[in-house]
Amino acid sequence: MFAGKTLWQIFASGGITMYILLFCSLLSLAVIIDRLWSYWSMRKVKRAAFMRKMQGMLERKDREGAIEACRETNAPFARVALAGLELRSRDERLLSSTLERAVTVQASRLERLTGVVGTIGNTAVYIGLFGTVLGIIRAFRDISAMGTGGMAVVIGGVAEALITTATGLAVAVPSVIAYNYFVKRIDEFVNDMELCASEMTDLLTR
Image 1 (cartoon, rainbow, N blue to C red):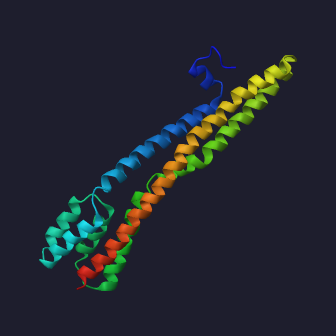
Image 2: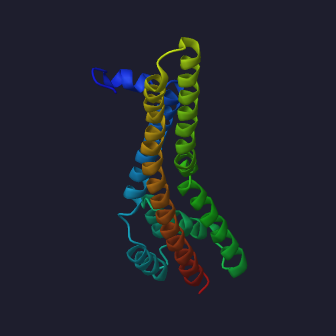
Image 3: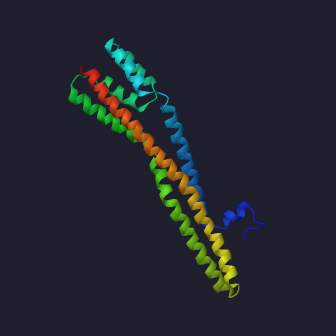
């Protein structure tokens, strides 16, 4: 069916839908790389070790040193701890609400652009199916215009149209896998931040 055709010719046979899917795949890939790099750089720091360091500094009354350590640590829970240290208040309710807001802000930053990957994963298949439907319509239109060819024309048109469905699946599957991974990693980061907030409340209200 595609014998003698170049990869570009096969791609172009899918019509404009293929270009939409190509854009979606490049956008999804860019976001995946950005998020993976960001999460990978953050996972180097362990919350337990960081909190032991905070505890030691605060027991020595070295609040400025603790603030500097938070600023130098590339981890969401460090930003949460920093919010508590910069408040300079021993009021437990005020401190707790400040840390909760910090957790929310950091969670929003972690979720940045992940919705794009999820949306592409959920819609790429439908975009591919839409291209297939357009291809089938085009095949029957060709039969009507030519008046000859019968099933050979239909089969050729459908085979070319199904390329968009296959491409849609190829775009959707990695996007869905990546999105589910991002959700899992964000949940882990949020758990660390909530534990950090609880521990910082105890340390700062002693």
